[in-house]
Image 1: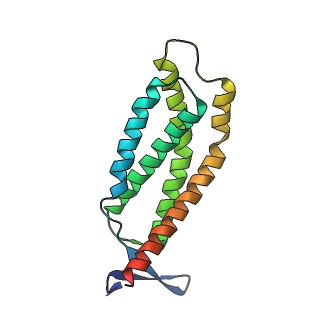
Image 2 (image 1 turned 30 degrees about the horizontal axis):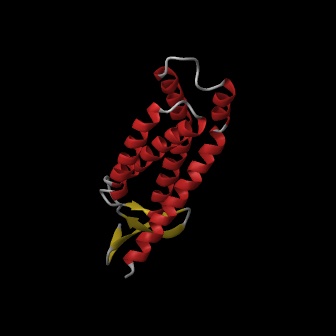
Image 3 (image 1 turned 90 degrees about the vertical axis):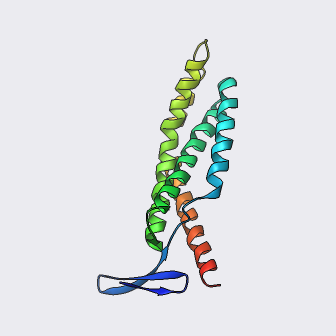
Length: 164
């Protein structure tokens, strides 16, 4: 039950006796920045393997991989169907949360890979490994907030282009 209104559709619903309207937003089937991000990530990964272990570099590798997977997830979700704006906000927030929380195991995985590549002792101390694990809550929160912000920007961009 909806109506077409120019370049967008309105979704009408009822919840707890209140009627509401939400914009139906169709994400682009192809996000142009995904290809560039993938190329940048691949080049960084190739260069990263040759460097000695550094906590900052491995964190960038883990967080960058999580971000790239979240953007690819948003592209995959966008192919499915149009979503009401509040669903899109929930989706982007969840993807941000998953990216933030997923950065921790990816960083730890890259620490293991980095240590296994070189033929000498461990590259990372237990203090550095423990620090990464302790950041789980913070990175999850930051990821969720960034996902929510990205969703708000997508909705605002859609609203600005749909009323022209």
